[in-house]
Amino acid sequence: MGVYVHDKNWGSRRSIAFVAIIIFHIILIWGLKSGFAQHVMESIAPPIVTEILKEEMQEDTPPPPPPPKVELPPVEVPPPVVDIQMPAPSNTTALSNVTDKPLPPPPPPKPVERQVNRTPPGLNKRVQQIDFEEYYPPSSKRLGEEGTSVVKVCLDEKAKVTDASIAESANFPRLDEAAVKVARAYRYVAATEDGKPVAGCFNYRVTWKLKN
Image (cartoon, rainbow, N blue to C red; front, top):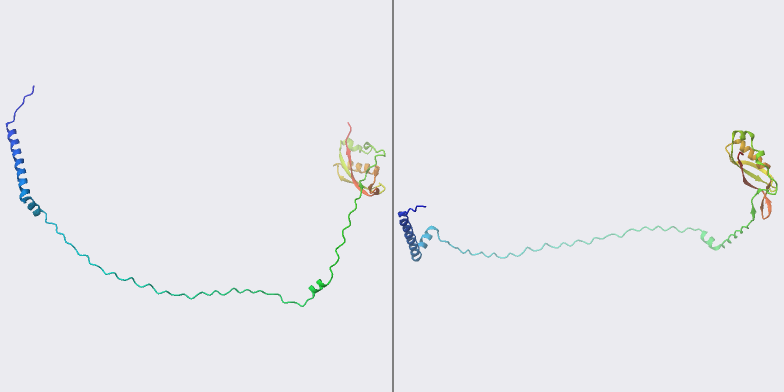
């Protein structure tokens, strides 16, 4: 249970403060009514002095005159120089001669080539041909040489051989020589033009192949 101690001086201090506040308010109200407070404020801060300055009116000065206009002389452009050189007239009669003489006649038309019925030379199939084995070189058989020889055969109008030469080799000289002999031993038919025999050439192929 707590013990309450009563301070006797507390009431007296409170009464003094209350009386001091009342006295302060009374003095403040009296000072506002009597102008004392305003006198004190004026003494602390000096009065504000306002001064009206008259603005001096400046007279408007006229603008400076514009600069004088300078007129430039017109620029004259010289016309371009055109130098046209005409050939001097020549005392020639080439043009008059050409115009006076009659035009040459047109060239005659080329003759139309006549179609010729040609037949190439070839083997005479009506005649029994020879056997290749008769012309196969024995040494080539032993060595197993095989190949194809192409012989160019040329005939006259009577179908006789005028020339026989190797056009493509069989890579074996013995086989090529045997092929030329076969070509010369054959019988042929001459080439013809419109049914008439003429000379001509053709290639004849001889194939050499060993029999098993």
